[in-house]
Image (cartoon, rainbow, N blue to C red; front, side, top):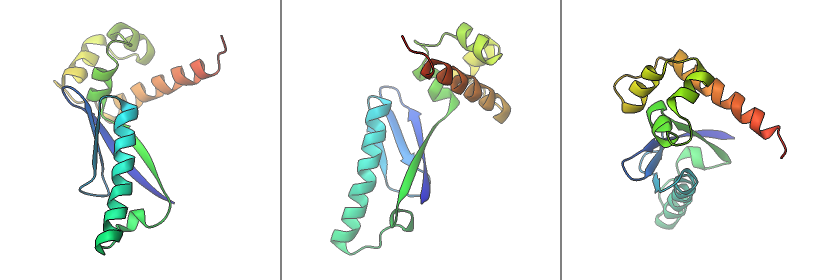
Length: 134
């Protein structure tokens, strides 16, 4: 099975996504769910168009594939700013609020270690929430 890497970015009024390994396919949507669905449909349309016009299907799409979605830190912080305050993210990640604000505004780009700290903290929170019943 081939793994495709899709990048989701926050635009001013929506989200966009593209697959790093395959050019010419993009998705746009008002939510994460919508942009993912649009991108997945775009890959299907590309395969169908290749078959219809006799063009070669990209090698990555010839068998089974999975899509791994990735979002840059700036887009993530902008997307969830109404759910996670900088104070809450500081408590979760141990990263200073001012630094998080710089990442969200694009004034500085986090080092890979900082990105991993944010990702680990969020995954840990997600695991804790999934394990609860109300």
